[in-house]
Length: 135
Image (cartoon, rainbow, N blue to C red):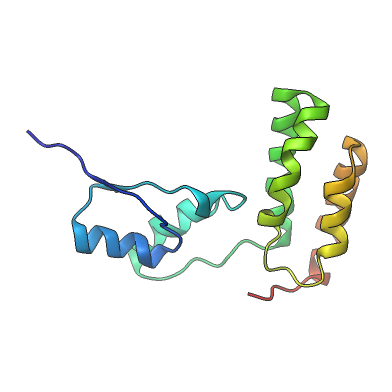
């Protein structure tokens, strides 16, 4: 009988996922916090495990689109008030590492108007070239 063993605990980089597989022989990896606000992490880990190379991180446009999709799904599922309120904690993660983003993040987390938030996200998407990553 084979019982699958899964690695768990602060898997926060593709290298650490590969280390768990190689060092402990696990059948799978459980990913948690590293994916919050960064859903691309799963593909990055899979790619790294196959090739040993890193994928290019998502740009501002991809991040904005993910935030828009997440907000839309949140509002559809929980209603406008709760959906907007629960999304506020995710903006920091979606836009982590983007220099000079504080002003925009403050607008995102203080607004309770869906149209205003979507308009701000659209403006960010249209002006994506103005932002640089400081990672």
